[in-house]
Image 1 (spheres, rainbow, N blue to C red):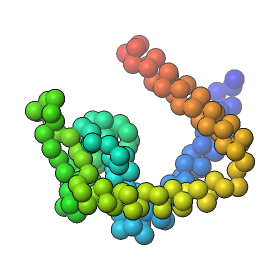
Image 2: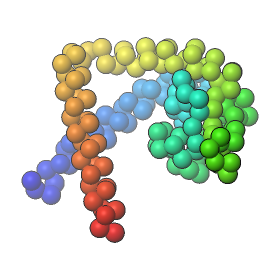
Image 3: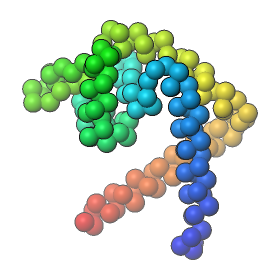
Length: 151
């Protein structure tokens, strides 16, 4: 493989992700939420909550940004911080009853919004895309782990 043979794939991946984010955000903004706020609510939905570290990993929101987003959701009374039952020094973020109600109301609508973008892709193509994306993710994680091991 030449050093640039992956660039068309990288461009397409980046463009696809940006198109997805733009399409998704159009609907999220109608819910009076930012994409980051929606990401946290969707990630916490159907869970008892999670520590900040895990929430940051699952949402891919940086630690500094995550704190501010959680603060704004706390102000809206959609999430709360509670002391971790296993480690009194850390906090767990969980949905409040209002947050659970919001999640239950908006998440199915957002999935329906997203589904409209995927409806033109045949099921076998979706399966192939999933496999290809999983393989790419695994290659990237492996490369990252190799860097950590040699550092």
